[in-house]
Image 1 (cartoon, rainbow, N blue to C red):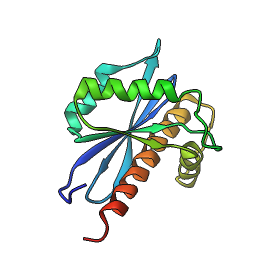
Image 2 (cartoon, rainbow, N blue to C red):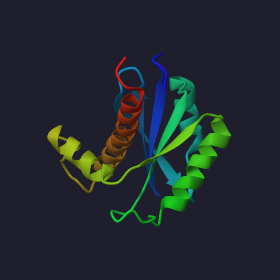
Image 3 (cartoon, rainbow, N blue to C red):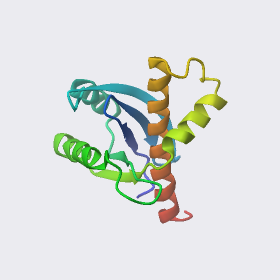
Image 4 (tube, one colour):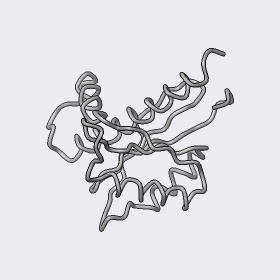
Length: 151
């Protein structure tokens, strides 16, 4: 990764919702951005199109679910198809990142921020999806910073 600042989007794919976060390569920080509904196994592409137009990312990061024992998660094949669809649709590099425990970390972050009311509400689930995307994206950004080494 070069040192020029660039925007990246991160995705936490789910069968009902996709959490999306936006991040910055120079600062290696990310923040929750949006939650997109999934209907009939298809994401709401028009909303993703709008986010792509607004943020103009240079890379896309998708969380790949992995079992704790490193085995393939049942949702992994669907996530790989989603990542391939992103790559075809936007012709950008798409990176898969192990998202193991990202939902637990997202719940911890949301609770620490005081966003733990009505944990089973739709709003709470959408918040967790966005924060999980943030965790996934920050994991990837940290890995890139580590690979790049000190400036």
